[in-house]
Figure (cartoon, rainbow, N blue to C red):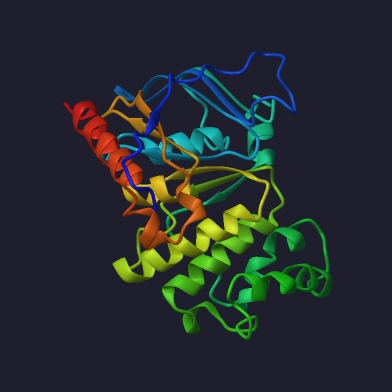
Length: 275
């Protein structure tokens, strides 16, 4: 714990990668991205660059287009204006090939055991059930799921279901993971426990992560950098780097004066962006 508040570092918004960037450049690059659903402008002139291995959070008011942004990055939607590249690929098919997407709901298949839900990507790539299970099995103990490999989703707690969903996303083996409010459906106590668990899980991975959250504290605790979006049409209005929150237990991190200062600045940016 620090003895005196450390001000959060606020940085200028980064510009997009150039057309020639490939692997070794930006993992995710957005340049002048705008998106409309019919006459409704959801995102406007959004620019963002995320480096390989960086965990970046997106927060913003309800309805500001956070989930739409993930769908655009994942190649599930095409931007109305501007360009998006994932690992250098700008086509929707290239972006989709580079991303593993974890939606808000866990979407586990109820008829499959936990280990078979986690290893779906390997099965889809043609691996046998035995090989897919063998690849997933060592991670069950690491992720606190040992003994539940053969359990069906209905027998798992909400937190355990989210762990299986995250493991499925991780085992997809993509360079970019997109997490859309992964703990929004959990109660406050379980959500706090899962945030601390995910912080540890992310420290052990090299993947680039883009995480959307409605919870400023969650984003600051889990991420290297947090981008604050304005109300619709969304554009980036602030960018914060919290003071190394993932190196401490959650209860210590969120009480750190520097963390508290970052949270207040993020809340101020949200208020300003909602006007």
